[in-house]
Image (cartoon, rainbow, N blue to C red; front, top):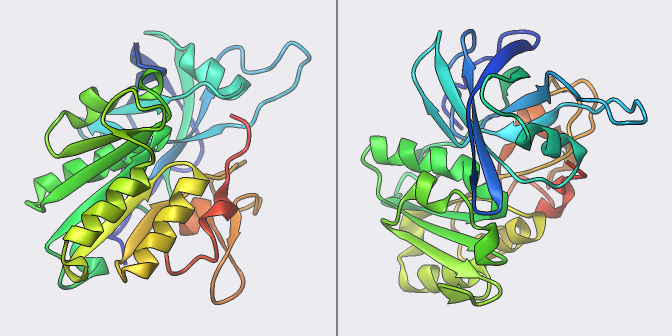
Length: 285
């Protein structure tokens, strides 16, 4: 069971952009939240640019569910940093925000990551496995583990160097191993290759894995951890309309039958609880 999650104030609130800059193929921008609590690693927010949120044809865009990559400050002045990849009109508008712009924010929502001992009483450390924009919530979890004196190793995968933004800024270089599908640097291939190599050389009975990334990568991580009997928590992505569990747009099937709503029961879930990580595949951003 995860630690008690910070509860979101009801409704959305207007925040101002404090900073915005490019990092690799992505963008990091910060919001100053004067009302909400500091989020837990793995929680997310629903974001809507205050201006120009409708397309030329008048189409209203739903808020975008974005995980937090980094926080600082405390309640009354919490700085929230978000890592954005432009994949559609909504994320495009968020990526275009600059200092002083307004952004409507609701959250923090969802269940965050557990600590290793909550997943495995014999845990001696953790492995973090991220891919693409999914590195964001893992950056927060790594800082939480470090703050509690928990040893961790980080494996990050990208399709090429141009889409590996945020690594140095959010993770630094210590205990971070990189994989690139195009062979431009680090390991040539998938980040799951690095995970297999690490589990082969470890006492897997004393470890836990945390992962976030593309659905196909998460499904591969889920299966690998099942083969090695390693507890794993996955931060899933899914199209979301509300964040409050009302629309059932983010429901994923469970192994025991029935469904869970990622916005309230996730987005962090145990790998052995879900039928497939592919069920959380995100739609257009």
